[in-house]
Image 1: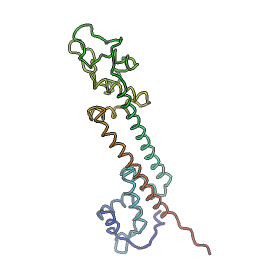
Image 2: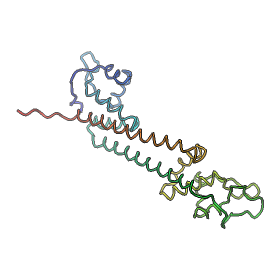
Image 3: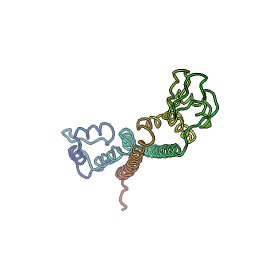
Length: 260
């Protein structure tokens, strides 16, 4: 690729830097990182950039918002060593991740909608459903038996979710039985919905953490709107990055000799 630089006029580091509000050192750093192709040198040792370098810088800066700095760097390095298929594979992986994030968001929204439309757990048989001695759970709380019966799962499943940190039941001070308050019931129901959607426990954990941090499903609505906005912004940034990358790829292609 180093032999395919389009001249079109010599550019100084400051010329590339000014267009994007960067320092000249940042431009040099990008070249050293392989984001820009290697620059030729003047007889006095100064870097001589070309419009091709300017196109590489525009492509990289356009890729960063949609793909992140690390992936954008890997894409440009691949292009600059003529590994275009590798670069396009990295682009495809970012798009696949964005699609997966959209699916996760939809799963969370569906799970929260199901929470809104499902009645709280009622009484039912099962181990630890009622303690043999001591006070019962406070109003709105329940034991493992009624909760597992309401969800249609085994009590052992709730215990496994507890070990995974997805559900945090309290303990009855008199009996030591698990007591699920409203927050624990909510987390159990949300975990159940996501498991039915095919999500693994390690995938569910950060979603449960978001619900807890927001203070419940209702305050999470603002977080979900922001999540939508950020995914849309990433999608549009990927479109912009793709346009600049395609322009740069066209510039790197060898020009055919004119017919005689």
